[in-house]
Each structure stands twice: as C-alpha cells, then as structure tokens.
Amino acid sequence: MYETAGKLKWIGATQSFPSGFSKREFVVTTAADKYPQDLKFEVVKDKCSILDNFELEQDVQVSFDIRGNEYNGKYYVNLACWKLQSSDGSSPAPARSAPPREQSQRSAPSSGPSRSEPEPSPADLRKDDDFDDDIPF
Image (cartoon, rainbow, N blue to C red; front, side, top):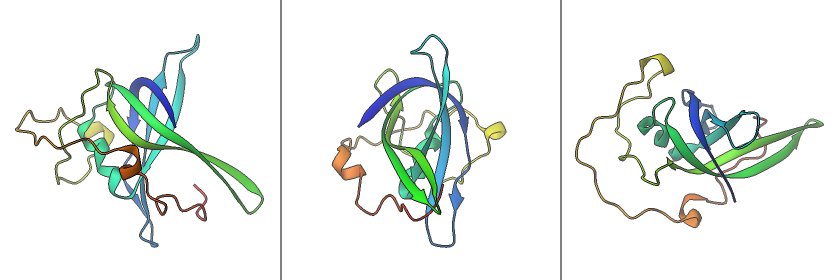
C-alpha cells in the first residue's frame, strides 16, 4: 500500500472493453519533491464512479498499489488506486447515477443530502479478481 497527495490535473472518461472490464484514469500532480510530478492512476470496475465527485485542481489523497505485468515481452506498470479522498480527510458525497462528464463539462457537485455509510476497509475494496493482468494497459 502506498499513498501520495496532490492536485487533480486530469480526469478521463470511463473506458469499457468487450470482456466486460472497465477502467478510468486520472492524473495527480504531486509537489512533495523539488520538481512536481504528474502521476497517472487508474480505478477499475465499480470504482470508476468515485471520480464523479471530484473536480479538477482539487487537493486529494490517493491510496494505491503498484501493479506490474509482462505481455508479449513488454513490461507494464500501473498505479491502481483503491481509495481517493479530499486532502482534508473528508470523503466526497456518494456518486450520483448521472453519466460521466468530459473534463471541459465538469461542474461543482451539488451540496444535497449525503448518506452516512461506514467507510469500507482496504480489504473490502480489493478483490482477487479486480486486476486482470492478461490485458496490457
């Protein structure tokens, strides 16, 4: 388990594949080092909707695992996010059922009523079948 903090720079649209696999990528700019770094993370399957509640330039805390695999003699490394929250420690309101919006169409989330549900543990968020290492991403 790894963690980093930074500002959301880019949020991509959900990508769906014929196998039923879906993923969504986002970029966080970290300022922990002398030179800021843009790190690309991904969320998969049902976790794709967690990004709907975040805005560009928002300070976030990312918990992730490093995944690596080999495909046809090439090696790939992915930063697999399993928890994303605001840097102030608060989690955003639960995702609405609206379809994902493109980066240029993003607007501030409504301040409607939020349900209070217990935060899932890392073990609840990670399942053995969450990461299909046969697909080269």
